[in-house]
Image 1 (cartoon, helix red, strand yellow):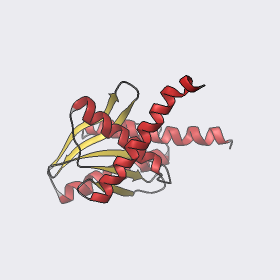
Image 2 (cartoon, rainbow, N blue to C red; image 1 turned 30 degrees about the horizontal axis):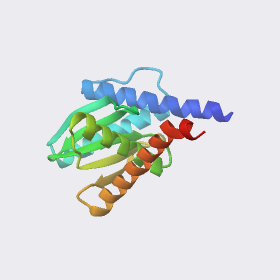
Image 3 (spheres, rainbow, N blue to C red; image 1 turned 90 degrees about the vertical axis):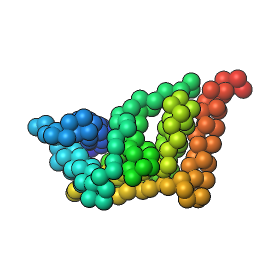
Length: 175
């Protein structure tokens, strides 16, 4: 397969997974549509496993936002989920990729920035939820901002992201 075809396949898996999670959060009786490939079904089922596992630990979970567009003056994006779990607010990003990189933390820091600046919402942490497409399972990477190291890291990510945005908008001035 060519590189662009592989990218399109993975993009389709991610999009189908996100769409079905969104439908599930809207209607807990959501039934997967026909025609999904096995990887998309596994990724969605991996989210459902996480959801069920959270509910085994606590009933104190509230969906504040799902698939929520966020926009500020210079950038925007769509957050996957904002949840209140046991009284703490977590920004959750669903990933179907095989590898987790710092770029995802830059993305979360941008959403955190917009939640604070545009919606006056402080969050207690972030979760990168890596959903397996090969089997039903997940990895949960949690940043708890009560942990000084986690807070320092997300603040560094925000500074890095905002520096890139500033550079992007000002590069023409120095050309």
